Image 1 (cartoon, rainbow, N blue to C red):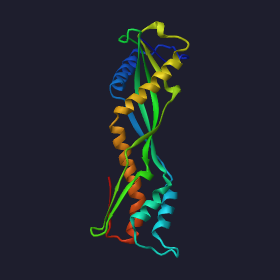
Image 2 (cartoon, rainbow, N blue to C red):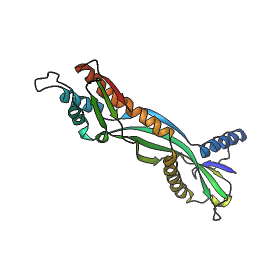
Image 3 (cartoon, rainbow, N blue to C red):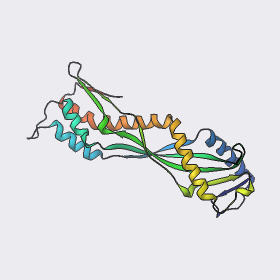
Length: 217
């Protein structure tokens, strides 16, 4: 097997490096590994400003919170999203569909989040409780970084000059297929979205009536 990054680096790695890369690839092929970036991409300040306007009167006095006033805040249909880095390995098969020509490790970036315009808000006045149900998590963008491709060749004939484009398209397809089955990433994205919605609404609700509790689910 021959290891190198893209077509420009064909230097054979030390034996220990090969073993480590092989073990890593085995894990990535089986599961894929993702990590969340620390940045949540949303217009939080804008939403807070709209929320402030919704729960205060024209003279700046706080009024009673209603379902309509909360829904008004989210009418802008902004998306709350987070970036996730996804590392995995795709397999390229020969014409027989069974033998592996090469493996290609790649790094992908996924944007996952919710549409604020699809929030389901319920206010229970007697219980002094607000329930906000989130819509399904959406994968809005999936991209593969072509500069991260690393190969493990099992067939020397696969080392063609045009292999990079073929491998890049293979990785794009592999990432899309993996995301269809991805549960952990969706769960983490949901937790992030819950935290964003809770953090936006709770301070203003407490400003009106501190007895109210909020559940985001």
